[in-house]
Image 1 (tube, rainbow, N blue to C red):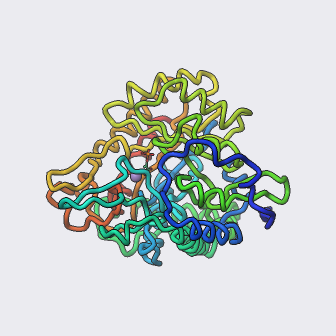
Image 2 (cartoon, rainbow, N blue to C red; image 1 turned 180 degrees about the vertical axis):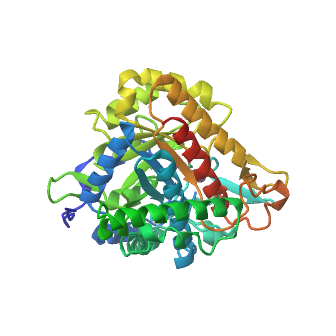
Image 3 (cartoon, rainbow, N blue to C red; image 1 turned 90 degrees about the vertical axis):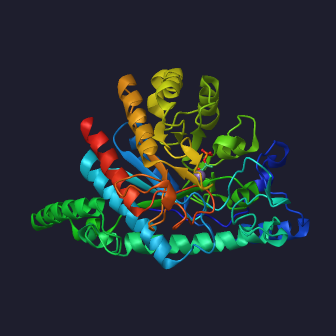
Length: 453
Ligand code: PEP
Ligand code: MN
């Protein structure tokens, strides 16, 4: 059923892309190298197909209607070096484990979307970084420059976009192999737990996996579920559509309909810093037919929300638009209700998802950027409370996580302390939940979903 995307020319030149203000863009110094990189990207095959994006849009339509829950997670910033088999496998296993816990708790479908295979560019609050009196361009993600603090690494290099394409392609290849090649088979729920540090959440998962195993065997034995259905899991890719040179070059027309799709990922979103109604990013999102998201932080107004809705989803297509709120645990209960009310009846036409990470970041005494697990949970709790009070559907969670046992966020059942942050702090951008904290979170969110049934 999936449709190929033609090798027709990318749509870039059909539109007057260049004239709108585009925030957070690289300042490539070598125009020729940029032309070369863009030409190569335009010639590469699509990473995802239009038909897959359409299926995801339908699934997100179910989320908008309150019939499904979205789990979206992955690194804050992927790195080229981090594209390894074990890293990808651990992240996928973690997301699959979380999805199983949520599905079991909620008793409804969980739509699984990774922040991966394209999440290589970061918006920054400052263009530069100063260390010991030396000022260099800020790190903007491996798509733009290198993390190392040297003039060479920090120069904006367009050839990196080509590297990112290949890294995304190999990431997606492994994800597709895992999710359709039998690894994600529901009869393997136990095996996803293997290889991680033991923890209370692990033990709890193990118990749940045993129950699921029994249920699955029962369904199989009674002929209700067929083996092929259990073998596959649908898993989608997503990232922030930030660097427009990359995103535009990978935008193609679908051979079936002639409509443009961004083929760099199934779902793309505009971040808090680039969601201006009259800016280039929102214009770009308005032109592609992928399911799309927009982050809404504490400064978002009713007018912003209504303007975005009209511009990005004028026909109110279920699943087309997802609002991802990231207010902060101390603000969500005050700031979310007016936004939901402004949309009124139409609140049910879009999916509302909670990013409990980006409003809860602080610096530890050691200087590490961190987040408290308890704040993250509290923001999700506030998100559920507000939606339940207003009769709208708390459609999902968007989180930064890794399958590795890093020490980047504090708290959780492992009671990670601020003093431990230096032990294994590996992120190049924002702090992520580690495997155990991610599983802890899934159990807590499952309980919130269960409480509403
Ligand atoms: C992010 O998702 O990593 C991010 C930068 O978020 P936001 O745009 O919400 O600040
Ligand atoms: Mn982040």
